Length: 203
Image (tube, rainbow, N blue to C red):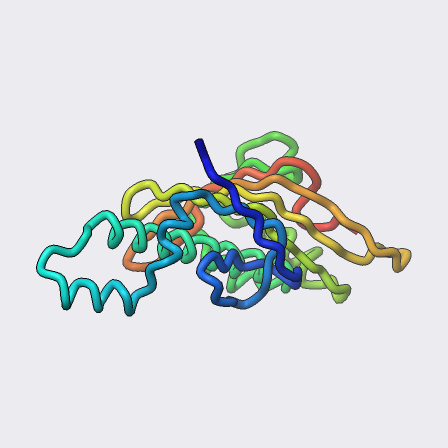
């Protein structure tokens, strides 16, 4: 049985999933937190250090739970940064976060598997960088699977609000999954799958 909690918080730009109560770059709404994440909530780095320095036999399950929780927060944060780069039309920032051999399935590729950065560069140079209208993105219900120490998968719903060519506010939704791999202490997006509306509002 999985215990789900729904945290009601105001929404702003790209959300952060502050399960620990600390705000990151932005806020979230209707964030789903599993019971394994809640276990890690009560531990922060200072309590872990205090526990390990004062106890001769620290509880390794609490330490590992806290470590997993922190790594999951890292994945949410780097996903936020990637989406912020997309919203800002910043291909250089996007390319730093993505593996050069990035693979993807996305609506813009019409069901084809895309490999490499050239396909994405086209949209940055011809659409995203030229868009001066505001884009507001919210990540709903992010769920992170840690796959060992250096790999993770995040699944979420991406809600994008934008202004169309006629000046009307619009919304689009996509369901996204991203696979992350850590190399040389740096997380890189190696694959993503996007279903639903195109991630970039095609105006």
